[in-house]
Amino acid sequence: MTPVNEGTSSARAGAATQRHARAFVGVFLATIVVCALATWNLWPFSNWDLFSRLRTDRQTGWEALAVVGASRERAYPIASLPDGYRGFALVMSDFARDSVAQRDAVCETWLRDATRRFGLRTRRVSIFHVEWLLLDRRGNREAPPHLTLAWTCSAKGVREAA
Image (cartoon, rainbow, N blue to C red; front, side, top):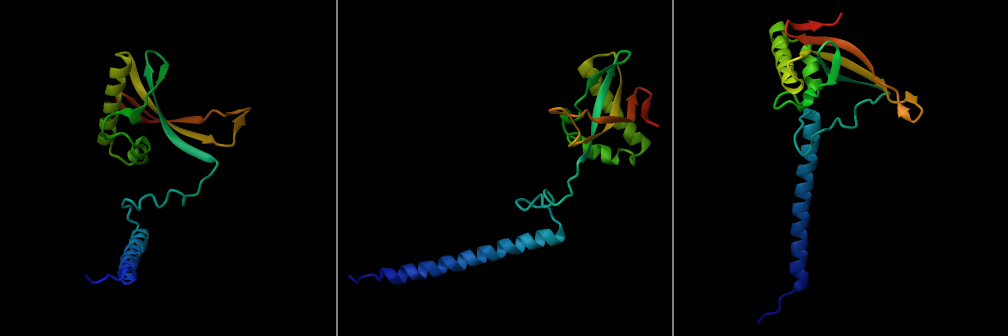
């Protein structure tokens, strides 16, 4: 038997590992640069803009209320609708630019679901634009948000608030 020189074989293994590691790091960094420059949002390099957007004290969002009976308002979580309406803010960002037929179809879906949830006395779904200031406090609690009626969905169709 011939003795194996362990120092030589481990040196070769170490050199091979370094070559593979360099290749991996090179491909990894190139992928990061390409994704950033091409603005591709590919996993696991997604959400590049997570911390790059300007954050301010003023926050905005959307809220829907179902009007049951004469005037009883119930919180209506549109985001919980199955498939397609999980991004309520995304739907509302294009809502004003949608055609009247598209808005009527969306409103009809919302009204039908609200009627199923809250009963046949559901008259309309009101969509509010919500604004609040993070630093506006009332003692230990945050101040209530400011709601502005933006859209009303009823059996007569969708109506933009004046």
